[in-house]
Image 1 (cartoon, rainbow over the protein chains, first blue to last red):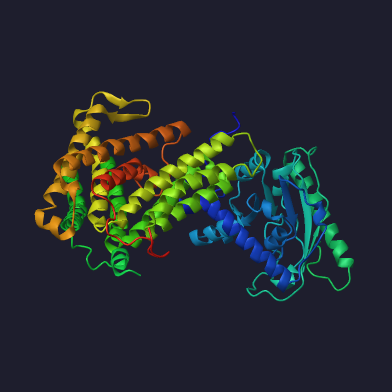
Image 2: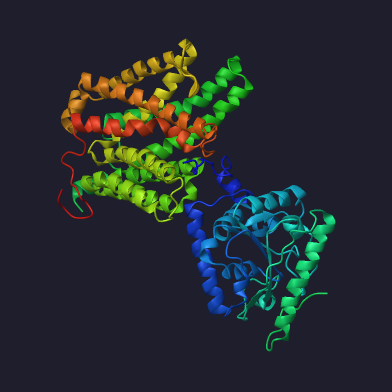
Length: 252
Length: 344
């Protein structure tokens, strides 16, 4: 009889706009409906316009928590990763988006939160506590993150080094990291362009990585970042060997 | 569409035909216009400090938004009044759901929202049988839908919270909206809303002036017995005065206003509004204390959430409706099933 405990929304007490930028945001009925519409339309667009192909979807964990990571060349990337996820996870999957781009105004914040379910990642002032909050959320709630560990879109299509933030999220935990490689996104919508070209997209999902035995300190974080990058790079190598596809090459 | 129904729903040309509507509208405009002057004068005279002045100013700005939001739909027509109260119901439920955690139960929330929308549509249509049927049907739907997740743990609590939410923010508020199906809905609604809001002010003032014994120290430590009794007396007086003085004989003959204008009924009406208004206030305080939060939201600066402002209306609405309906009849001679076709 003690199964139900009254727990107010974690973002109670925030104004409507502040709630959209809150790290502890929880989805209500309106957000759920908007996520369903946005992700469905996004997936339909990717399938029809970019003929998106998803390989290795069986590698995705059935239930959260997990973190999806991928190379980042385009604003299409989050949609591509979201398209691989089942509908029932839409409310618990949070793309971590650049705060200075997607949350720079109230209007943008509302769109990013209500439509994409994005959480802000403030690149210039992303303190350890912000990542610690996210780590805690990952461990306490059944939720998942979509993360681009390069910290921004690659300007030349080459994969940059991964920042240790991914390590701060998962080092010493049993949260699986799912490496993914997105191919074609750079040519479809590279930074600086606003109209996507009709370029085929391919998403390759790799087997999950676990970092339970890695220490939760700087050395461990860097190790996680390196290992995850190698995993993503390998997926890119496999894709690169395939004929008629050679976009977004792996980096240095 | 029937011309009588069309005029009631959409015609605002006769908005000020009734003296109560005109009188109260003018009074509200005067009060809103004079309030800054009074606050400024009291500050200059040193009666209020800078903190209280800031608080009063914040509340004043809130009222400057709330009053037109309440008054304009009533003046525009019954359709806008009903839709406005429907939106208020949904927003109040949203606050309640977020405060209690019920929003995480998406299916229950969906059914509850559908129930509120259904009540609003039944009210716009003036279809009383559907209006009455929707409450038990929605409760049944909530009890059924909660089974779909196959999760018996917490079933009673989930359904209990949802049913309470629907009864308070759906059914109760819908009774306020149903007043808009009366030919004289403007004075009715203005009288009820005005007296409920004044009731809060009377309780506060009487409590400050004479209050010693606490009314319910565990639920709401600031409320006093003197405040409650004073509010009952003053609110009843207000209802009797507004209802009696502003309904002269020629208005009764012109507008067909009925037995509710008799002194004994007005007295009971005023008492009902005051007592249930205070119970509504206490009810929300109890809910907040039970959950462990201070305010239900931050929508209205200086007040908190919508529920913190409109809590007193929740219990008043159904009681006032049934009392007025029993004594005078609500919506007598108005066309029914306006959009869905004639009948009863």
